[in-house]
Image 1 (cartoon, one colour):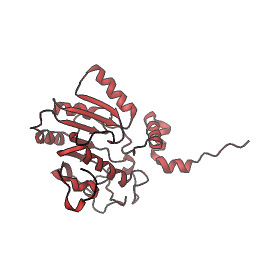
Image 2 (cartoon, helix red, strand yellow):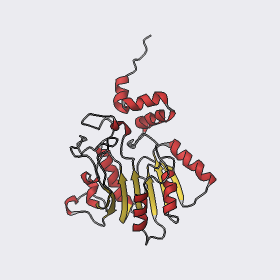
Image 3 (tube, one colour):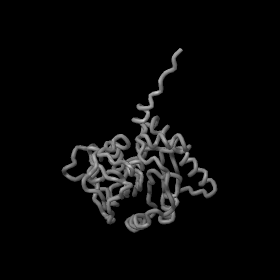
Length: 254
């Protein structure tokens, strides 16, 4: 009787060498490998690194922009273990806040913490995309250090699509545009791609720029998944237009 030969090369191609190495050493790494292999949604960030109030300038800017909105609806996309949602509550005491994360273990921790401090205006769900969210429902979406892969900090090659693909980024930004009400805000930072290169750019105007030098830990790639010659992107907050730029007609988003 002969045993089947395990195809390590195929597994490496599907999950990446460093993620597989982490899987052999850490429980969270094994969880991310499983998600990479089984999730119908793309796996973007594969680390749950987070902390309280990581982006005070961005949070304060959106708070000021939404001053006239008594009870804003906010989405933290890739909320990890909930620190971003808790930070947003400090800036927006009357907001309705949703946290989504692809990792079930992270959401379990959020729900466990919430049992000790109930907040009826705060909810958490397991999700790797926004497909289940209602159209034009949010006043602001925060996507911070989510559309990136940590392994690319050590990657010296020209292409990134073995770890993260522009087409997945592009599709998710299209759905962010669907989920935001006209005049709502998208806060996008520390991604491996630029919003200006995506189809969804026709729906957004940049309203806050934060001077940002090239970051070795978050290299930038273009629509062809190839490393951009010019690194660094200072566009941080975008306002959703009520109608698309003329050059972007025919998308189907209303």
